[in-house]
Structures are given as C-alpha cells and as structure tokens.
Image (cartoon, rainbow, N blue to C red):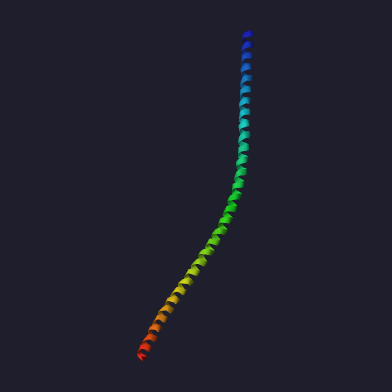
Length: 111
C-alpha cells in the first residue's frame, strides 16, 4: 500500500508540475498578446496619422494640378495670340516692302 501511496504522490507531483508549466506558458502567451495589442495600437495610430497626411498631400496636389492646368491653358492661348501677331507683322512687312518698291518705281518713272 505504501508503494501505491508513493506512486500516487509521484503522479500528484507530476500533475501539479504540469499545471504549473501550463500556467507559466499561459502567462508567457498573455504577455505576448499584450505586447502585440500595444504594437497593434501603435501601428493603428501611425496609420491614422499617415492617412491624414496622405489626405492633405492629395488635396494640395489636386490644387497644384489645377493651377498647372490653368497655366497650360494661358500659355496655349498666349502662344496662339502671339503667332497671330507674328503672322500679322509678317503680312504688314510684306505690304510695306511692296508699297516701298511701288513708290520707288513711281518715282523713277516720274524722273
């Protein structure tokens, strides 16, 4: 009977040790969970800040693209008007030269 009591005591000791090991592993796991929850919260805060920053950059970028498009439009219109001025000045120069030649011919014919 003493042998059975000793065996029962050994089993009891092993059972208590196993339970203690499981509790220790659970505590380690709980610590890891808490650490990862804190990391998750930190990442979520960073993500929120980055999302706000991205929104501000997108708004600024949209305004700058609108401004660039306005510049492009003004440049195209100005270049078109300038080409018309060049064409007109070329026509004026051609007429002026022709009239100058005609005046010289009349003068030479009158001499």
